[in-house]
Length: 240
Image 1 (cartoon, one colour):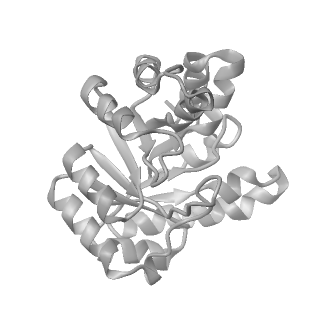
Image 2 (image 1 turned 90 degrees about the vertical axis):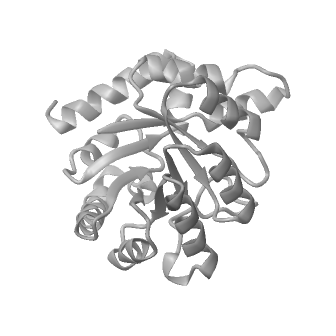
Image 3 (image 1 turned 120 degrees about the vertical axis):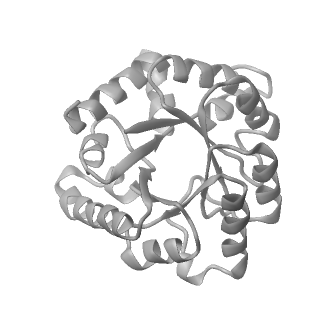
């Protein structure tokens, strides 16, 4: 099972002072040296954290499976086609949100979503769509030609422990629906050391994307230790 580390918030910290430190590219190299299987970067319309050059440098300088998160816009599709990452994840994006608030409503998406998926998949990019664990949404992704879904784990990760079981059941059903639809199944948003295990234990799950928690935890223990502990917990949940 792959652990893709989202390094967006290294750039958030850098941008707070407007300088060059900490460097997201160096963070990506450190992640790959200490247990990550890939790097995730979300290039937003407003460039609030990573910038174009950050993404281009990681692609050029870091041997990794790059997961490029993006909104389905003409600008981002053109960027992805030039970048040629191993994977893209199409996410909903609103200028005013602090972070992604939920899955993309594929059932109500306009025709450009299908075009975006087709163009990127045709260029050899594995295209995933970030969705809620809902069978209808997942099946719609398959019909549009996506190769994967990333299930939104935010509600589960943010819930109190007593409230998590039904949310986990819904995610497990979504993972089964993804496999039944012939899609790779990934998960992400809000996961931490204490919540990743049940997600990693799902046999259909192939990748988790984790960022904010790991970058935050690194303030206390360092990024390598935060990643090693996440990898340990994933492996434990997988019986590895």
